Length: 433
Ligand code: URA
Image (cartoon, rainbow, N blue to C red):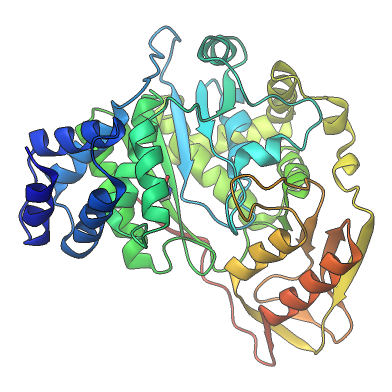
């Protein structure tokens, strides 16, 4: 087989066979195919697409390119969850312990943030002592004993995807649905859960800017997972404004804790309950989403959800006193209001740029090597549809550097729209598949 012939085939719009895809991924992983040929292939895929079978074969080739977790020793239906990423997305922090408190074994490997979206691992690391680098043995022991473990992705999990994603990132070939679906699902399949719940975001703060693309991506991932024998579901939700009110690592942990106490923002609580109810049904802990919602609400009210979060944090070395005193998470040197420059209603956010505000404050990563300041970020006082008076606070900003604070404040004001007429926000949950 020659890579040249495969590029030609895809360039001319033909489908690649399973053998060709396996050969290509194997040889690329072992350094026998140069980046310039793989870049040409990715660009050919970008323009020609991949059919269902090719997308599945690419996923499996990448999933099987490294370690695969065998979770069969842990009793029950193991559940994993994946978010396509957004701003203020602290869903795993609340959903994981909540589902675990209902008896669902939750196994999750997460990434760090890059660009305007934050990562679960960075958020958890704002809890002093919290360890995210677990061995596979310890990860599995903890799921068996505590009911939930979240660790950073190991370098041996789907290594072919890691190489290919880095290449796509610098060759303008990330945003192609088959490539995104196979990339995400290769990691999820290698991580070994039985039930995979997809939290697909759509809007100005998400990868998928419009609903049609979010649905196509959801359908592609569901098809791959089902073909691989997994129990799959997806919830498509709005990312045309930050989720909840907090944006920034430590601030988001606090908001997740508030939510587990039943004191979280309405939209975030709704998303957690919607995803949680699907997860409970997939893991056969409830018969219907309605029954599942009742169980979930009960676990919040009786304190079990927060207790499970504390247990999980302690199991991974985190300091539980921070959960008892969540004001610890709000400890930036400068805490200032961003006053509105006019009276009216908040009608829009450029959500990606609100994520960039956190980046400007030092809370995100410009490159993979950048260090993150866990305590910076912002908390929205006003969301879409809410009224504001001139001079009233639109958000509270948390900074550790005066210059960065000024830049982030200016950037925030440029990326929020206030108009005289009220427009109600879109419903949070757009579709459940
Ligand atoms: N996230 C991934 O893991 N892969 C992609 O291709 C895009 C987003």
